[in-house]
Image 1 (cartoon, rainbow, N blue to C red):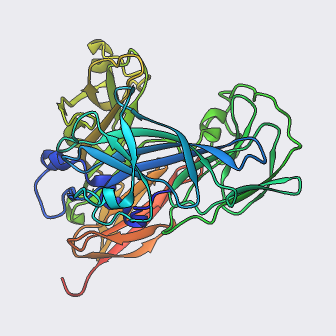
Image 2: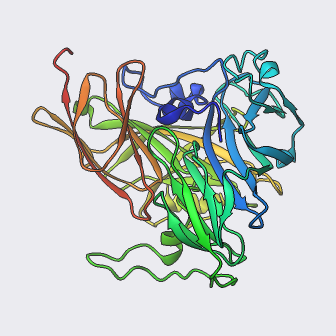
Length: 433
């Protein structure tokens, strides 16, 4: 869908908007990495394709994207070649308000310094942001449109076919009522929407486009699913997650985390993690510090405004006494980092970025000449950056690999399963360092 895709190097865009968190941890060569961008950059892309009536060749697109270039006043969304777009609308996700836009040619888009590489043969939705993107911040957008594309969506006899290479890495495709999946080329979750329609959802961790193709036949019931239960998996050797946790859509979950390993002698790593709050009445976020870890240097910013937020380290008892409503129960013995904020208004959401430094000898240590990072990573999108001068020798879990401009290696562990990724990572020093 995106004509300006960053591929797996999208880790640059994931970090673009948190310049101000340089103060989050101790200064050092292996600290958090804060790239900048002068042309259009984006992050956190997710697309929902709602297939309309078979034979219509039309599908409704809901595209979530975050503009991350500081100072940007506009955002450009390409209209895919071969598709006829209609019924467009654009919203500011933080405020819940509509944004103005117009369709412009690629030649016109190239006149903006944000888009020097715009394709002259492609039209773009030119969106005026509510405010220019502040430093350390971002602008979250919801773009809706209907495409008609008979080459991508058609009937093969009585079988419905949606055949479309998908460049966005998180996607959901909703079938028309009464259709079931009979063929699928990309591993994906299969879920039932509240109205009974079948949907498939997936994360594509690799580079390039996902070769997506789904075939569907009209044999399914049109019935809403029963409510999820709190029953847990019975599988040994331990009790697993609840039914609700296991069946939740992984591709749309918006929590992500990046670990920046310090030199292993310190047994410490800095990290940042992002979280979106949507619940009315909640006025704080509580990050529970994992057992065996000690957190220090906490900081937080409101990614929607760039505002620095207070970050308090406290016990569960202190949190209860504070009357801060985090919307969840914290274990009695837990240590927590709490970020208070103003309660959200109706239709508003809040995107937080929290940074901390953890000392965790159980998870991170030096064994002989080998660096060992042994940690369970529970988010759908996780990343680990090795300290300078080290290369990966072992990774127990599959990862994609990139390199920061300063030479540090980054491993991305994208998890499309309900259970956590058990990462055992070993690294050695480079001979030239």
